Image 1 (cartoon, one colour):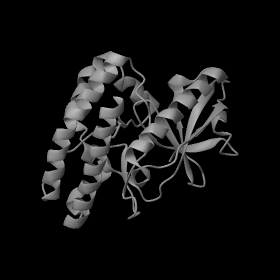
Image 2 (cartoon, one colour):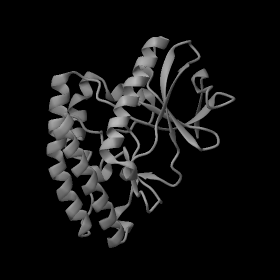
Image 3 (tube, helix red, strand yellow):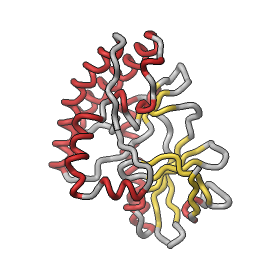
Image 4 (cartoon, one colour):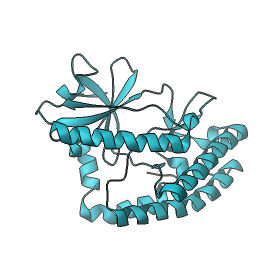
Length: 240
């Protein structure tokens, strides 16, 4: 268990010490001692209180849109607050319930599942794809169903360096298929078996967003082929 101490955790934890449980492209994810909540921190957005408050409002607005896109069956609640870290910088924190027993799809052994279980996951993902495509047609945006994983903030910084761009493109276009998603989790709740845990907005410019979402929409065709293959018992390609 890797723990971190910072005053930014004060609103949720008395000793300001939380366990790091995950990390993504921009985010560090921690869990509270009572295992009831996760706390998401974006260090690159830290600054003054007005700036952090503006980011918190923008992230909340994006989350509300994406929850409306996917519906309550495939979503979880997100709460936003602003807190200062040990150095005095203000952060927009994302607070979510910790989903006990849930696993990212990237960690699921599909070969160990029954045909009925694989069919249920495939049906859930097909519905998520349909709603995401419909939402894109209406708004020009869609939730990030794939995500990226990092073992530490240092690894994330290394992966985001310019010379790592070919690797990031290979991962984006080939390895990160929907069945190996880091942002979708398989739960033990039959009423909501697959849930999205990341509702981040894309912070790049308009041209970047247009290309990004167009490619994502095209990659759904690949994912639908993989879903059909998995449903028939075929091996699921590894992701990263």
